[in-house]
Amino acid sequence: MFVFGFIICCREAATCKTKGLCVCVSAMSRDQGWADLPDVLLHSIIALASSFTDLFAFAHTCCSWRAAFFSYPSKSAFSMIFPPVLLQPDASVHSPCHRPLGDKRTCHVIDPASKHSRIGYHIPLVNLSRANNHPQNSLGSFCFLGASYGHLIFSRNRSCLIVDVFTGVSFSPPQIPGDESTEVYYGALTAPVESPNPYLIATNESHSYFWRVGSRSWLRACPCDGTVQQIVTFKGQVFGLDSGGMLFVVHLAPLIRVRMMGVSWEEISTRHLANLYLVACGDMLLLVGCQGSFPARGDTFEVFRLDQSTEHAMWVKVEELENWAIFISTDKRSQPLSFRNPERWGGRSNCVYYYSHDSEHWAAFELGKPASSRNSFVFISSGNLVQPMWVVPSMFSQSP
Image 1 (cartoon, rainbow, N blue to C red):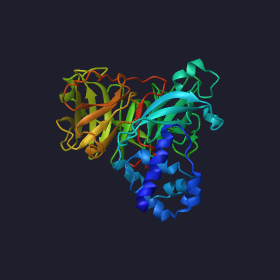
Image 2: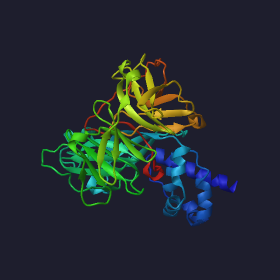
Image 3: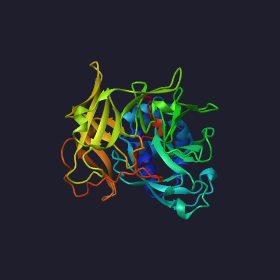
Image 4: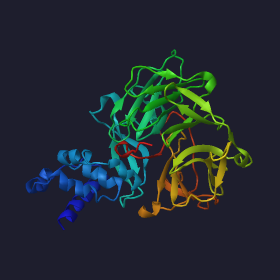
């Protein structure tokens, strides 16, 4: 009963968050010494959390609980227990904090594992959907490049900005080599920023640039090696797709090199799949596509895995994802995610989860079967604006 009481306290904090309030220790909590509980007990409460929402509520209860949360070992293990959350940029609220990023914005976060299905978070990040109407905003001229490992990546000419989705902590690399006309359209991290030697990859029409986080300069791949438009780290190796869907291997050491792989496309070329996604899924590197530029009712998602067991690598059709599910975002530059055993939170295996613009909620395509729901419409875009996306918060991201 003692531990159960603390879990109730955490859930009450989550309820407060849904009302947009700042959660802090109540007078009653102070009288009972909640803020002075030892870390060993607080860590035992964290272990009983049932969703990312519970963990967020715990971390925002008070300063000592927040410190206990960040000192909890193996937080990344939660990414294997809880599904990613769906981030929906929404309305703005004025905030005197986080001046480098302008005003805060309330973003709706849908947590599939939580009974609090729609929660409002004040995320210290400007929603660029109104940037053109507010040119005075400090981020108004920044363009969205991509999202990976709980971070959003923006650019303005040769400058980049990397922002933690939930904390608002940001940092910038040196300016990308080139002149003022240099325009970058894609950016991604190769690993969580706290992991050893993560890189930021930024791509324009002719070059791919590589910045080791914390270093003082960018490196550039040879232009004849091709440019990367989508990357994923799989078993410690970075793979990428170019604009034509050709597969690359990105070598980061000892020299930066982008090498095209000779992969047979025989099974895929006859299916005319659009909007290809490269996804790391357990011990499989997958290529996910849909028969339709804007997946909707009647369309089908199909999946292929990279088979390197023969002399010539090939994409082989996957009939069943077994106990895996895949999560794709509105913008193809946002990192696709996979999750094992979704039934533990009420989800379904062998499905591709997405954001439905008709219902403004998440929905799922069952692999290989035409979508039957009238709400099955997926708007795919790659513009300058932040779009709905699936996210694993950075503090829970696992090194690939």
